[in-house]
Image (cartoon, rainbow, N blue to C red; front, side, top):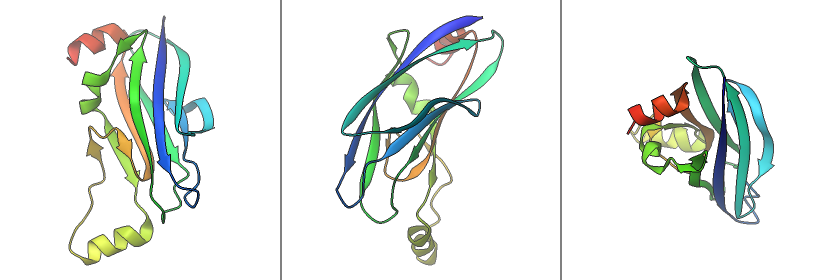
Length: 145
């Protein structure tokens, strides 16, 4: 069993009309950090006890967008045991929940937005950011450089 500590600093841009964006963090579909409002900037820190030789998905579910007004959440920094994972963020994916009316307009214009965006760290739509990894974590970390 290995214990690793994550720290994720998020920032938010929003208007009074759009309201405050929120996030939840899951590991393998189990909630690790409950629904949290991101007022300007917030750092979420949590520890994970992981069995070695396992596959996992860390998921940040972004919500609170009203599908009308502009609003965004950005991952400013993510660390594991104080090691910055910035270089690894190019390999993770965001799966947006596109606003229904916007998506319909895009398709009508002949544009089909992708189901997933690789490397996104700013999320203007609701959706889920997913970082798959294996344990031991440091072996995975060295293999993704």
